[in-house]
Image (cartoon, rainbow, N blue to C red; front, side):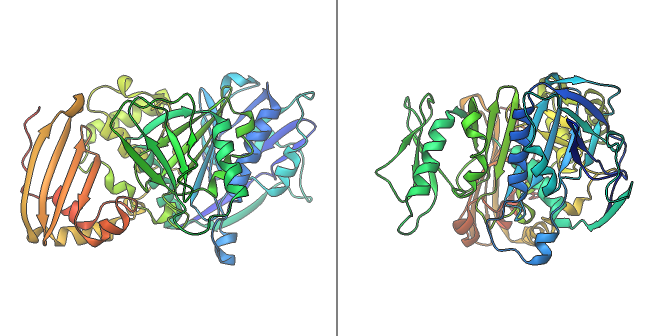
Length: 466
């Protein structure tokens, strides 16, 4: 898929005005406002540029040059930026509340690509609290020509993997996760230890330890005898540990941590994607990491954990129109049985889910919704459908453990035993299989074909409500 990116001029900082040129081939998006705290905005945007330049594995020259411009969305309550790292193992998100601007002129809400060059990053360094800084999003905000040209255009081949990356991000953020606020100083201590100590050998993971009634601790493997307490946290569930990878990618947080008030950590489970959201006053800087460095977002299959039941057309259209009108909406505001429809909008690239306040926001990535093939799980689904005839047993029952409505599935496919748990919205919350694929990956690479076969089995009958 080829997408043309056309800008009126280059983004630049000129006379105290930070002008971000937008893609003129998208629906018009424009905003202009004097920033109340330009130094914080500078730090956030430079940290986002650090994410964009992040490369934690070797890339070919073609892959290096294929890095796409970030996406900016002007919302009624905030302006936010999104971007992937060059190796697509990390996703960055910066949000600035609209209340932090003195808005000037008319605002046109929407989503578009922006020109975000290395030279612009250098210019950002000149922002000072003693100077008035106006953020302008839109071609109309640039009043000078660059290199004698008032318009320049570049075409990029927008591959399916980049589309899939955004789909998988939203599918990951839609998973049930353990979330808590931690002190930035505690994460800085872990990062300092990792910089000063080279691991003698594997394992190289980070392990969050949970004990009932105690503070959560973080172990940087292989130093088992040196746990870091995450002070101020408290856990009241059963004893457990969640092991994740991404210790080198934690460095993406380092420019913001010294200025953050707190950091929200989200952990869906072992080897799964996880996120860190830095709160700098009302500003936020988030980094979402894939399960491990080489498991980039474009090759993930977390959309296969999403609800499989098709959303009724009337419900889907009603949610699309309502969310587009309101811009941001909670599940309570959306009403009963609306979560599946909202999640489907996220998978089509029309909306996004905020993992902290659990709201859904209207954010159309393109002028038309993403194609279904952008999900990328077609081959695995087709293989699962081919296993349907080999299903030996399958049972379904509804449960409400700890007040949580769930559907449990037990089955045997081609000699492999499967256990699944689906939440009230139909998402796959828990899964186990005896196959080699699951033993090697758990759910870090999405469900195996045996899980998909059991979940889609025509033998299943609608369960009684618990």
